[in-house]
Image 1 (tube, one colour):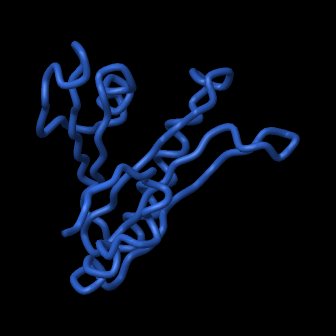
Image 2 (cartoon, rainbow, N blue to C red; image 1 turned 180 degrees about the vertical axis):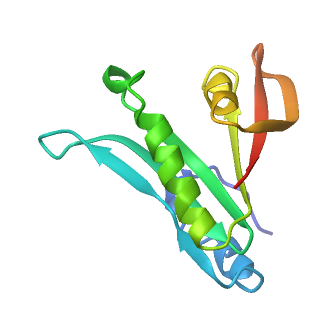
Amino acid sequence: MYEVKPRNGDELRPLVGLGAYNRCFIQAQSDISCAMEDEAGRCIAGLVGWQADGLAMVDVLWVEEAFRGQGLGTRLLRFAEEAGRTRGARLMELNTFGFQAPGFYEKQGYRRFAALEGVIGQYGHYFYVKEL
């Protein structure tokens, strides 16, 4: 009998066959990740994303707290949008929680297409898309 055991997601990432399975259907995938560094070369903001065919996805967008409000997130997002667009993406998709940055994405022209309200305490989980 097989037993289910708790594990850290990072431990399992190399084992999970989902990436290989997905590559059967999404063969041409581009990395559109980008980052910004301070004068000392330390990463202060970054975006992890990918593009395949007509879709670009943002998995993570983060700006170190001391550097927020200076337009870094906007610059990262625009860089990724352009990278996706030049590779053929027509849409950019992302998701965020209510305690993160839904207002930021709406200011950047993203349209909410789905919402799960009150799933993390009183906070919702929101899904956005933007035509590129």
